[in-house]
Amino acid sequence: MEFLVAEWIGKPVWMWAGFLTIVLALLAFDLGVLHKEDKEMGIAESLWLSAFYIGFAILYGGAIWWAFDRGYIETSDGLHAGVTYFTGFFIEKALSIDNVFVISLIFTFFAIPRKYQYRALVWGIIAVIVLRGIMIAVGAALVQEYGWVLYIFGAFLIATGIKMLVVPESDPDISKNPVVKFFKKHMRVTDELHDQKFFVRKPDPKTGKLVVWATPLFLALIIINIADLIFAVDSVPAIFAITTDTFIVYTANIMAILGLRALYFALAAMVHRFHYLKYALALVLVFIGGKIFWNQIFGKVDPAISLGVTLAMIMGGIFYSLWKTRNEKPETTKLQPAE
Image 1 (tube, rainbow, N blue to C red):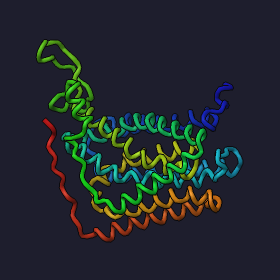
Image 2: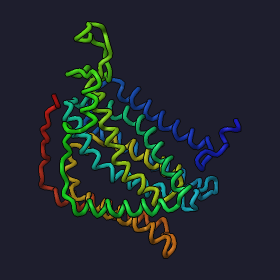
Image 3: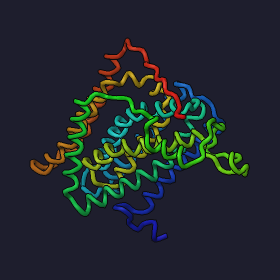
Image 4: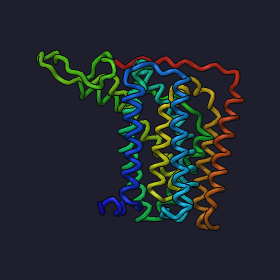
């Protein structure tokens, strides 16, 4: 059992194994018990399930906070583990709201019924756990080996924030997505859904033999995970700008994503109400990016101040958006699947 106390990427193996066990147990309970049968999730159920995930994430952050104060764990950069966890959690949660709109477009494009959407989202988390882990591990290795990479992260965050402030939003055209074209060209893809299945066996029209076909649900799953990776390009550097502790970066990311999948069905119905949150997020990215340069010139900013400023900007953006759009009606997006 000595391997459990061995250090891996800055933390004992038992901490990594414990976290992944918790996440997998939550997913198994979600899919195997709460959603054993495919059904359409209502807004109320979405909110209750999301509240459960958010509550669990807060309890987990509280445990990290307590363990740090008691001296049971230390962060690699000496910052307060609990404060940096919650800062990263709130940033990832807020940045992911834009992802909800893209996911909604993808499901619309592939004509995925609501009763199959949640299963696809939850299975997508498995891929996110692996892909985010790879991205964060690579980022941590770069930061540890080349400290100046943090300046690149900071400059990238500032540039991204400014771009969000000045460049008008536009809806992505899923039909022109190169990944969609690639899979449709190199894979057998059915024209219709087969319940919740990602793959089915059907006769080949040329040979008549039974072969494996992908379904539109599988393509939707692939595109959603690619979209998540694109959004991670913003969120992962943002958390690394707060702390270089890989464990805190990873756990904050995954905990935020777990709850977002559950909240999707409520947010998808009112995502138009969060239009002005974009500008608050842009300011958060500029603030986090600028903090890297401030830390080197004037000394490190208190993590509690970073958390307070970040939370104030995000909550301000949410409340202002809800107030400003209180009389607006949701826009309907009509997309036709590609031939």
